[in-house]
Image (cartoon, rainbow, N blue to C red; front, side, top):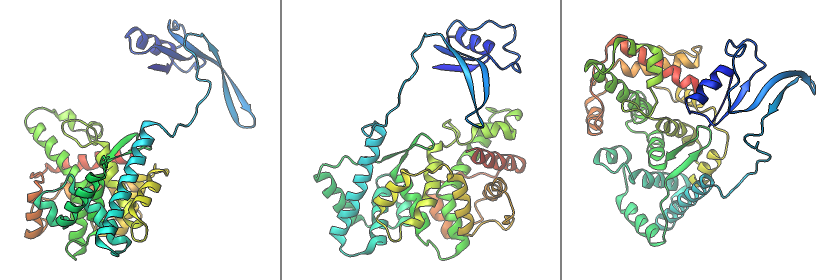
Length: 361
């Protein structure tokens, strides 16, 4: 590992044994950690002069090189990389599922085959009675698919590498989130919106909130840990309280994918999507969630993205288990949602933290 920074910062990190090389920002007199400080022993580059307006408006820096570590002289693309191979195997596997469904079911149309492909992928992880109520699995078809795919030697690779956030996502989670958007569960728009949210990002948010509140009441967290800044650090992080970035990416991707599945095979849609630039996931989610409807009356079009996220999050954090009807609650009780009544002030701070974290992504 290397470090870029002023002299004193590089020297202290080197002394702590945390870096093998320093790129010293030596020309920056604004740093209090440069003037009169010793350059670190492991310096490899020493940035000492800026030359302005090269080739128009480009600035470049003059850098001394110590020769300790060779610089990289070239970069080359490699289609045989592990992440590329993983994705190719996954896309091929999805295509095999899709093709086998056509072979078994006949002419059920592109959307019909896409739905059954998603159900098969979801069933590989979400095979409980509660999820069956929500999804509606064709278990006889799933059994035939398993037999055919295993007989033909498929490895059932269920990972896709998302380069935008440098994380792997799992197909069963992506599939079940997408199915929730494609299926008209109740026919009542407000309740449909609630089901969609609770089966994805809102369910994760409530799990975090319930876990944090319990830990706070048990004394594991102090009053100062309840600040918005501290909660922003804790939320959407792979710690014992929270859900990871992978979960959120899968939930948001479902909002981008479900509109594309009407007239194109699912393997083509997924491959094209994950080979594209998806750095606007959060904004895409907000726009599609607003277009979906069934959101709190407090949200207005003129709200900023951050405000819309905050109001969406707060709507769920302020509810108790009576805010949906008995039938829906029976389903969600089967999925074991967290049961808690949030401290009002804490609910507001967690909603702000959620919005801030997503906005930063």
